[in-house]
Picture 1 (cartoon, rainbow, N blue to C red):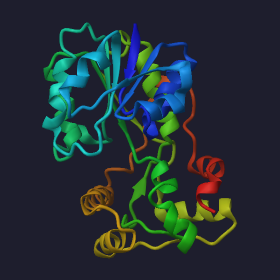
Picture 2 (picture 1 turned 180 degrees about the vertical axis):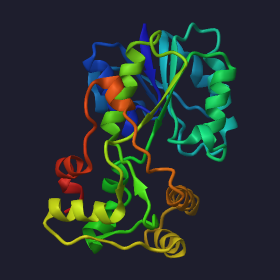
Picture 3 (picture 1 turned 90 degrees about the vertical axis):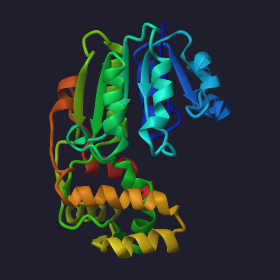
Amino acid sequence: MSVLVTGASGNVGTYVVKELMRMGEQVIAAGTDTEKLKRKFGAHAGTVLLDMSNPATYDCAVEGADRVFLIRPPHMGKPEEMYPFIDALKDRNIQLVAFLSLMGVEKNPIPPHHKIEKYIEHAGLPYAHIRPGFFMQNLSGIHATEIRELNQVFIPAGRSRTSFIDTADIGLAAATLLREPILYRNTSYTLTGSESLDYYQVAEILSRVTGRRINYAKPSFWRYIQYYIHHRKLDSAYVNVTAALYLMTRLGTAAHVTTDFQQLTGREPRTLAEFAECHLKCFI
């Protein structure tokens, strides 16, 4: 049997596929662009079309899989949009659904991840909820432009702290769970780095690694939203979601540090300094 990895071309899904293959598992990489998946993984993983908004793609995607890594597609803002796919997993002898959720969501019913977790549980599917903190890739991705061009960390997080984690570490943890579905069934894990940093410290780390003086701009929410919508030309709905997440960060939801990653993998998570050095080209 094999592991179906949804969102296989994304930040986390890519690492889940690679770690499972390294462990010798048979993997089916699923997504809406199978040619992209073939280019990314070659013949080392099977590829299959899966569009969660199209139930006609479900049967072929799930065929032969006994474990599933499940991620919410970014365009599905309503949890109900994922319910049909979850329903399609019933009565298929699925040993584990490892769902990529969100840190603190068990106490926060606002994000869609909360209802999706509950729906998986109520469906009677064996589950492992993976609740990571903020991705380090947020810095090397969406926020890297301001770091490179303005020498600024342009994030409206105030003086709050964040326990960043590398998506490569999330991928390793997810693969570990999927490798042992019986051992980890009906569990949940909050994955963080080993340090909780404010964004002044983030700017100091990036300054040391790049050799440039990078400052924390500490913009207001209004300035942040206006800049990303009107200057960066990003979708307003997406920008507003990120602003809402940074509002939650200001309330202290991203500061907690856990040892769940170490307990699962026997390794220490990558530090932000190590990540920045490895991804230096994103910041220069």
